[in-house]
Length: 435
Image (tube, rainbow, N blue to C red; front, side, top):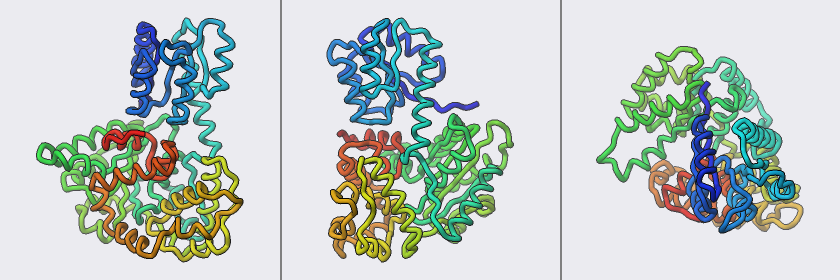
């Protein structure tokens, strides 16, 4: 079975301990790095999306508890296992109270070490399934969404490839996560290929790269996705070579343990895709396809998503906002929602952050919607979003804006941007954004 690689950081002032634990992790197929002081470790955490950190309680420059506290503030999704001295019960208890996932006493045995790691990830998974930060598929009322969910159930059962079309923010990524969560074990991969991001990253060095490089990257991602799912965003950007290669891969692969289910999405309508994709490739994709609806004017749908995101925002921000004032709710119904579900989610997060009373007041309308000129500008930006998102400065500004709004909380910023935490880290590194 193909297992997704996790990223580990081992922090201990004893280099021998670092190298020993690193060798164990690498032999198990994990990515592992080491640091012998906390200052170096902090810089590494800023630059890389680690899944789990193993750190000694007693460090010479800054103690392990202080580092643990910093990690939890920087990114609460990173798991931390504290290393303590033999029979050091007080440190062990203090570790757990400070937010550590677990502790382990030295000297460390390999079997016990990996048992602690497995338990930490399992506990995290259980928490994610219970809280509102998990990739829950919201099920609004109405015939359109009922038929959509019924269709998706069939896709899950049959492991069919799927084409998803819909406006920006209409929930394409959420559909993909739902399909993976329902159809696969958590250890089976979900690999995302964002063609728009690839185009942006290749733009500065276009003379040195081209379609061949993109085909090579796609093949690498396909290998990573063996036994699971690959999600390819922005199908309208697939050039002829990529389409030909994908068509070959899709038609030739067998339904073995290495079978890769392919989901492709686009903001373009089917009639537009039919003109830019080669006939055989489009015909293959069109066999199983869904079109996601816009939420504009759909009162019941807007209410359902508003209530869900209100609960999510209360959970993230530790608040107890009960709802919207009636006047503001009416404005929600008439608002164009060019960014659809994602724009609604971001707006509710912002509203909850700014609200001190029990309900989101109508007086926040100007703060949430902006002036009429701003709304026109946003509509213009939505129409030309593909072109503008290719520009590095535009995307960089959006990331900085989200991080500022989230007060540096990476999980919340990623949620606002509708990307996963690892993608946020990669983009921060690409654009040299520090917090």
